[in-house]
Length: 476
Ligand code: NAD
Image (tube, rainbow, N blue to C red):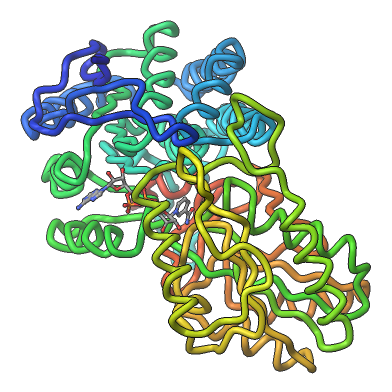
């Protein structure tokens, strides 16, 4: 049984009613347990954040930057332990767990720099009217609740935590119940660095704990990453309290491959876009649109590439893809395999769970999937790729945009003018041209349409935790 709630600078036992089992998905076996935080403990965490706010928001930008650099450095010092824990609890292959850690480190370093620049962003505002001066002042939004999912625990938490602390906000973070141990590193680092008590609080738990946080009247803002169904509940709570909310939700993203592409290179991008993290990425490019001229060749090579992937336990062997992270996710993906059979889809690779211990499924490819298929329209969150053919650029753009989601897209073409034109026409928050899933901390992250509200990363991520105050003075 693990103590895993960090409230007002102290580690405390959970007093909630839910017992959370932390599982190794490659074996399907639990390796730790903890009690969820109670609603009263969520109250304590919010109260601690409120109490810490006045002093924290008045720390100098350079002091906050020093804490953030400390987080980056301390993450690096915990490197091996954090990589091993992600491999064990998420089922990530080693190189993916390393990428996540490096991403979190880069995020804290980047927002340390932005924190230092913050005072210089306050400026005088020239007025057309005589007799007045005006100036802006950027202030922290206040106490923020951060609720995150399980697929990139170190990363999604860093993307919220680093800019929130840089802005001068105090926070209550609720990690996912599927991966509740990983973000404990952030509490341990806060301890090591002597971060003032209450600036960072961590409460673990399931839906009840999440709802207690998102409904809490003591928050000034909530930033949520997760599913659309929970996101809409979180938005309802925000609207009831009339306060801002950032939502990073699901996706059903397209990868558009024109027939001037090198087929082998395109296959590499397509496979990575649907099998990294076993396809459990909001940004998985799970809808392949391939131009007629290369469709047959590309689908045949894709089938071979998916069948060749090494799927297994990342802690026991060298693998390209690990298991799905939870049994619930495994059951969900299996239900889509059943739907595909009912719909009579043409399966070129996989299409089934693996007959072994743990929550493994095979990398899967369905061809010529109808646009009204549930597999074409719904987020599956697994290594399940659906393909369709197109003939013209206009048709590709129309089909890519025909989705209630709008998170990301990839465009593959040797004609860069065309690739840029298509990128401009896609209704999404981020487009990759001739590359796959390359996320840099300086660029923005977030979606259009049903994929969310607001942006993380870059200066936009910091703006989400800042409020603009204007001071207007009469000279008369
Ligand atoms: P989820 O919505 O089930 O859970 C997300 C978090 O919300 C968890 O911490 C959970 O405990 C909490 N929660 C559950 N019920 C709640 C409630 N009623 N009130 C408040 N909080 C509650 O999502 P998940 O299964 O953990 O994650 C997968 C989803 O996350 C996918 O849809 C994926 O696309 C999305 N995601 C989006 C991004 C992005 O940047 N857009 C990134 C990663 C994941």
